[in-house]
Length: 92
Image 1 (cartoon, rainbow, N blue to C red):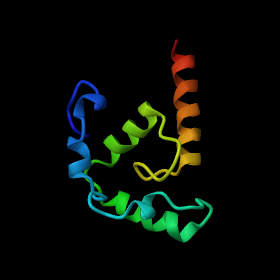
Image 2: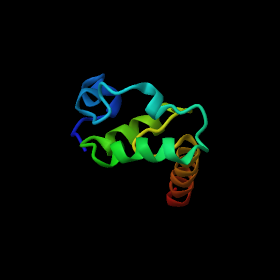
Image 3: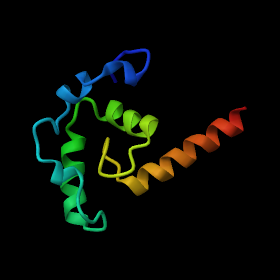
Image 4: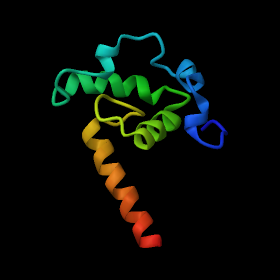
């Protein structure tokens, strides 16, 4: 993970380091996320990415609703967001 106060401070820097940089958006924003082969292809790229954690954090912090970010689909990110919120509530 890149060391910064907040990912929002990164601007576009982390995206330039991403494995998906320069690839077609269609790969990461499939028309139907239920199409498992399309999602698998995007996730395969994410698994090789040096900024996968940064990407996922950005998507969660900014509420990205569509596409594969940081190796998770929009549905998986909703689950992750709810789990994080529950952990925060329990810790309070």
